[in-house]
Image (cartoon, rainbow over all chains, first blue to last red; front, side, top):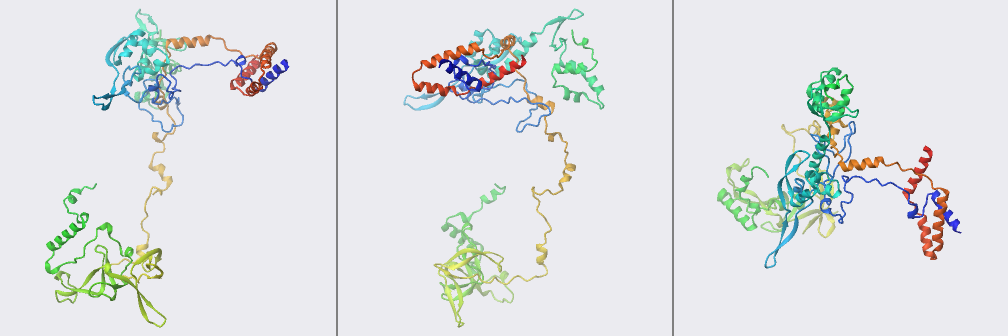
Length: 273
Length: 320
């Protein structure tokens, strides 16, 4: 009887059905995504930040590619976006998008006179205009911040630490301005991590970009584009003006410019160390 | 709002005034602009929204009417004209002696003092119908009130007209009279054929004014505004940059990458026996039939992850 039951249970495994039991829970790996994903529980009132999540500006996460059919209802901006999209940009009390508010918003209450008449009033958060020093960017940032955030920044040990912390709560309460500052700080940190080297003349040069194959570039994208222009011009059957060249090449990243230069007999020793 | 509101603002709109005031101002106007000897009609005017056409009133030139008030009370005459602004009719044989200014004189008139057609209110006439029986005796039917019903196309009037019936007598229809004689052509009139000839066609957006093939020559089919695909620059303008990973995130990802890949294998016979025995032991210890039935039902439910794991095992076996 015992064995029979046991066998019948395993015959169910092979046929695709299973008894729910913690013993035989199949080992599925859970992949945790980072907190910058779209708020899935936006309507959940139990969420601590429901006041931010209840009405956030929807973001478009589609990755558009050249040659793709023109998407309907999508307006193509005049300039390229400077900052990554922020999934928690609030659509109310919008001043919180222009400073570090840390999720504090205005509260509502009633004024009550001696005779008992009630009138509506609001309590605004304690916002101070301050200059905060960013260690990474080596400059002070003039910004409006709530006193609550100022306290948190002190606790975290600086503005950069406050901005770059990845906890979901921090990402939600950063606000649009904070998110943009975070991007600037992280970009600067990436740059600061690049080494400084001495060239043949003994001068110290900052490496600005390291290519996939290990080439260390000491010049920026604009100078590389200047080097690329004569090659492209010679390659074309028709005349290419600098403006036209700029229109088709300015949007390339420094890595893409290097890859284009690699197609031509370009002496990289001029720009690398 | 039109530009000439100021003009109207200072005008006295008589029709918007109350009835009494309207009558008063009407009398004032008559007194001011007409000589007492040439007095105009004294019938009150009807405000424009309340006016009705002769068809709506059920009366037309040529109709026979029975006069109920005034000097000619009790006679049957024919209608010349219906005036909607006064709700009055001009009928044959009802005239008044009037002094007419010389500007209004007609041919062969040689006196200021003439018989002038007199407007009588529509309320003081009743529509009459002429009936002739088999012996040739003529009799009149006078309708106290009439009702308008249905619609028919009258070829004499070249329009749709309602039928007229005596009220409460649906069988007695009073047909519309023959319209006054048609205009005769003179040197300035346009012949009917010329009127009906179509020399102009209305242009609408539904019908292009030129052939469709000519469109490409009129407009640039290769305009960059008509491109239906994204260019490289447009695609880049639509994509926003990625947020760089923070140090903690980089460390986490590096750790994840360093972890050995999970290998899926089938359970060995020994372990299968062991788990089976354990579960059988537990199931046998349950006495309640309801609980057993519940477990039986549970065993039939499927888990999607289980299917995935079995597929992973199969793949792993293939690679080995």
